[in-house]
Picture 1 (cartoon, one colour):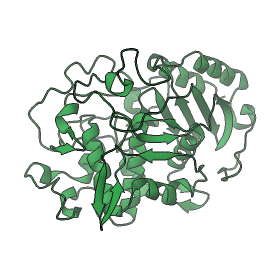
Picture 2: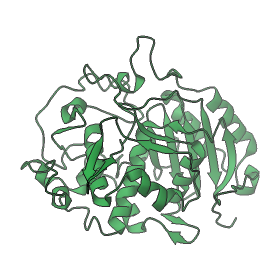
Picture 3: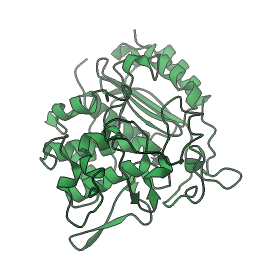
Picture 4: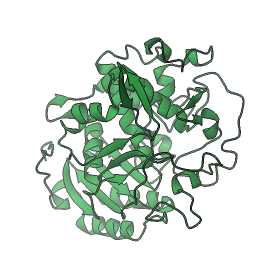
Length: 376
């Protein structure tokens, strides 16, 4: 089939067989997905009053309460495309919903826009060199060594407090498809290591990356995302990207919101399954959309290069290197993953994109495997 890009007003839906997939096997995958919803409460608050975004990573007081907007979640939903066309869909795929750490992958794409625009001259430049004098976040001898690559690979070891959260709140934090019991030591301060030598899933540092990019662009990252990526790929206008209640920075006398890289303490990206799928298709197609190169292939090659200290991670995108994350799909898979469980799976070789929302973590690999197994 010819390469297809959905327009803003129409997204072709075709019989799976027309794209080399089995309707029966996709039907089985959908039934499995609908029976595999995660157990997070619809309110996102547990029966004891704790916010699930902080509870599931074992945050301790005073950092166990959200400081940004929290909205009730929807139900399980999903979408599968092959050759750009929809071959399977379930649940409410147009409802904007919180997406937790899948927002980090959008942040990475905006770093790509900054790189392509020349705002980041080299990914190995020190971030502090690009910050204005009033930003002291990279003044210390330790932080002065941090590069854009370090921030994007979550190996920066940035030290400081941002929006009331010290970097130590996420010390020892682990994340990924198999992190269920890995956060017992989370929040215990440790001696910092040299930038680039330790991977740590640290939302404070991700939010420092977001703030740094906000300073580069001189405006809110939600504005940049809408103008430079989401509108060109025909996404809806219904998504929203919020920062914490106190996350504002003065730029040229204006108070600009700095978005968060997830819903750890509330806020974050609220977006539909269909819009997620468009973004996934952009990545699967090498940053091109209908003849326009929105993000350079050069940047995407760096974004999907395995980090030397975590081969399952690139620039805020998960990589299925050696099939270590999801054994049932290709080792070339590139994925955005957020708590809950939200998964955007891109397979450039097969021109396949799948989005899963609110799927039980323990059943994600089996569900992805069923989708992969639907190919003839």
